[in-house]
Length: 425
Image (cartoon, rainbow, N blue to C red; front, side, top):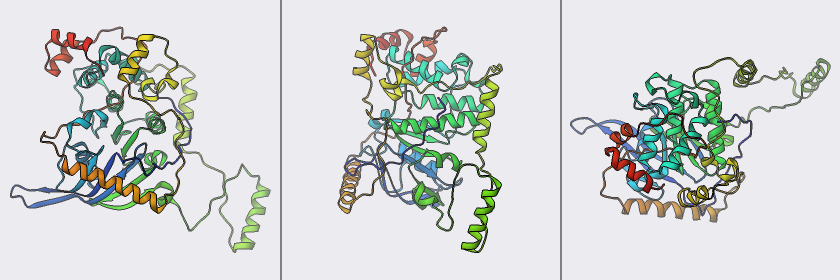
């Protein structure tokens, strides 16, 4: 993941585009053995997540964030209310392949290494061998684990496990990415890389739900947010709407000399009756830390752990970022297997909706909710296993143990090998 200083444009989704997630009156009540209400984890929550939007879900511990995410994934059934994901019930198994999920805690098989872990999840999404190899190579390079890809996951630090968790969440190139505390356990470099990745995926048209306790991280990347407390929505809106301070003004200029500062103080004191606080600007601690690390890296200090990540995986950003394809077979595979990506790198600037546009948006939302309620499948809830993927350009020097992966999937080695060549993304 490359570090970038690009500023993300705040966006709005056209009224005609159907939201990815629609929640109306969503409620979850946990009951005791005697079916008496024990806790209202989520209480009458309303929100929409639009296509191509980075949406923040904030709140302290116990506010209902994780419960809400589990209901969106279909891992918990709602007690009351209406919930639609891609216009279908959250429990519909057919939508799981379009979702990528990074849980708050990374639950990984400790005896597998990084490459085998990604191979396992790629097979769950029925990616063929060519696509698996490319995507795994690119993702390992992106999260900075290429040098330690053959170490077992149980030997990884928490931050390194978090990096491999992010890679598995992206292995299937999801349309809707759910990240629960994605920067937990990461160092400042990894945190900046994750934020840059989220921003970049948002610009490429991905829909992202971000839940985090680190408010500064959320503020840097989200378009809109809701703040939960006690299972209820306490505030919602864009960052500009919620964070605007109406009782003070901020003036930013280049560095001033002492004489100019004295003259400004005199002007303010004459006009307002008090002198403003004028001091030298401060940079963020994150920026200072990254600058120190960049200078230290120039000394080529040895590091056997996670490395600075590479560029965003090519399959996540489209052919424009990954370079032109020259192999005819790769072109055919891309046409058959890869979903289309938005052509523009820029996201539209937010515009205020007219009453007619708002009414059209509400009609779309009602249609989604009605469809979700009337087309509830008989299938049981299925866990959402997801991740965005990429297509690397080099193969591993150490072969993956296909027998181990096949045993986890419940297939014999011979049958798995035959299926690999015939299956597609």
